[in-house]
Amino acid sequence: MPKAVPLRRSPRKHDEKPKKSKREKEPPLPQIKWAADEGKLIWALITEMERKENRLVLFGREKNEWQNTSGDSKIAVYKRFGGVIMPDLSSKAPNALAKRIKAKAEE
Image (cartoon, rainbow, N blue to C red; front, side, top):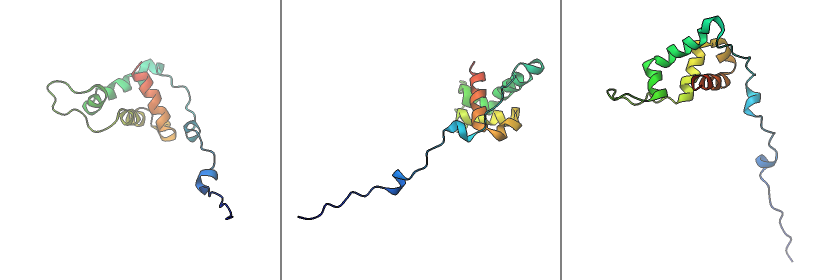
């Protein structure tokens, strides 16, 4: 009777290191005080949202505009906002900051 050959397991599948969650990759952000300084951050956010290239992505086009979008995603626009409004936090945790800006903008 022939010997049974044991099944080989993929070394990658069984020797993987535990994956880190996305939250561990970026340092936590401090609380953002949107209303501080007479709402300076809120006004900066509104100014960035009003720019044509950002407005087209976030809100769509108007009837008389021929271009629908710039090719950017909404989260890319919010990351760009973070770089303009809060560059120090954006360099540390751009994704987390973009999510916070998105939450504030859609509030």
